[in-house]
Image (cartoon, rainbow over all chains, first blue to last red; front, side, top):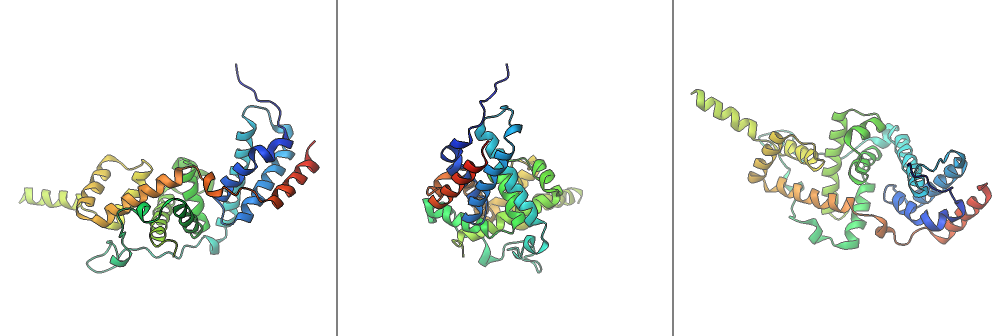
Length: 186
Length: 94
């Protein structure tokens, strides 16, 4: 028999899910204020759609599905702006000469472990700064794939991009993020 | 001569530049790198410590990114925002 969940109780949302929704959004958006606004938009959308809640999933799952969709919409809007989706990151490889395709020495990974260099809370802080420095489209692709663990085809479908474009973005994002973290966000 | 050519072809096939090796790392971390390319990447690591470091660092970053993030935002919603959200819920609930 299919499990159905009880009716939503909006008066309990803030205490039960407010901080978790905020943490989810804050890890994915550039500014704290944007994450707070996203929680507000989520609650408003959920309140409007109360009649559509059929109890097939829990209240929590339902609210998270709304905020996930809203964050994807946010990035889709921003990624549509060519100026904002432009990456000025210069690849850390030689583009000519006998070393073509190999690391530019000053930009090659220098540490065996960045975890040992930057510990605990500082690591997250630096990582957050570095993720924010990625161009919006790169950030969204990276977040959907690595943090939310969507498969690559789903990311391509949602953001309307080719597989080649997807892997190019993932590659650049990883290179940029690693370099940024090793330099502690500078 | 034939053997020499075949060997050269094999070596060229196995050797990668760092740009390609890091592209392979990106795919490998998502479990989407075919076996032969994986082998080429691992051979490259033997001769290129920088790419091997790139791989190790990327694994560390991946591990942290997939850990729950809530502890990084222990402060949660501010009191001001909580009050605003509370008001909105009160006003819009059926």
